[in-house]
Length: 415
Ligand SMILES: Nc1ncnc2c1ncn2[C@@H]1O[C@H](COP(=O)(O)OP(=O)(O)OP(=O)(O)O)[C@@H](O)[C@H]1O
Ligand SMILES: [Mg+2]
Image (cartoon, rainbow, N blue to C red; front, side):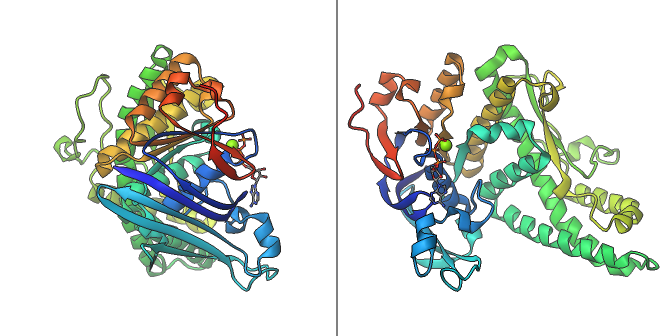
């Protein structure tokens, strides 16, 4: 099991300095608006994935005062993660190149147990599942958010995925440049063949893994959704790959990899997962078909960078037909499902981070969330109002209060 036992921050968002010990089990952090609740969960996620969930640039997470006063502005996030008997010390340091006022970008240095590593190496050392109020956008928002979501889940499960994704994105950029260079010229197959091969190689891996994880999330999210709001209908999460995989006439059913999953309480069939070789072939075939259009457009028109997934309630698309409440419940079901999917993939439960989730939920939904919270080895919840939780729940939780980027025990809490 993974457990973050210490977090240390320097100049991260509104935390100038923070040294925080965290216990196993449940921690509740209360604070008024704009005190640093989301920032704290962002910092933990940053340590886990080396990416900010909302910052557009690295500079954004560096404390304003550090930007104004430090000769070399920097921010630091460090943590001690216990996993079985072992402790890993993770650290990310951002420093402004050229110092204050240079206007230059930030350099990110990752160390694990004091040894310099790549950002990629952090993946899987502190698996987290984070739920933010704006995660309703996963259901209601644009496809880019859903691709980002899938990438974060998969990268935490599989470093190979992360490597392929990185390579794939680079190939798309270069291939687009090549496509533009071909415009208005007699077409030469050789000039694009190299990029096609690379696109298909990395892309097929990504598609295959996305198929697998969505099939898995589908089953788990349906279960969670049933527990949260069973009367509203049955949830289905489906992959909408940009590379059309539906024409699989030449794949014998037994070749489709059966998902190794426990018995299902719902009678929905697991979604098929095609072998990677099949996806590769299909992707390559389709590329030749869209070639002329791609040259004309100067961009890569098909591939995982254009993927999407949909959420259906009794077959109806929640993006179009769902109420805000239904969309929120679905996003929450997806996140709770993610806890299980990660746990099954990693053999250990991730740390669950819930940002102000209770206030929006009715009694029944709160109970189901707390049920999951109680089952994971470590959960950190934020709230503006202690009354979101029962006294019994708070009695067994580690209760903290945050004010202006300073965290202290919630002594004043009357229980
Ligand atoms: N780089 C930064 N340096 C200093 N302060 C920052 C920086 N980025 C954001 N802040 C400030 O951090 C404060 C706390 O933000 P945070 O989003 O964590 O609040 P919160 O406690 O989650 O509030 P809410 O209940 O409204 O969600 C805000 O006042 C914001 O202006
Ligand atoms: Mg917040």
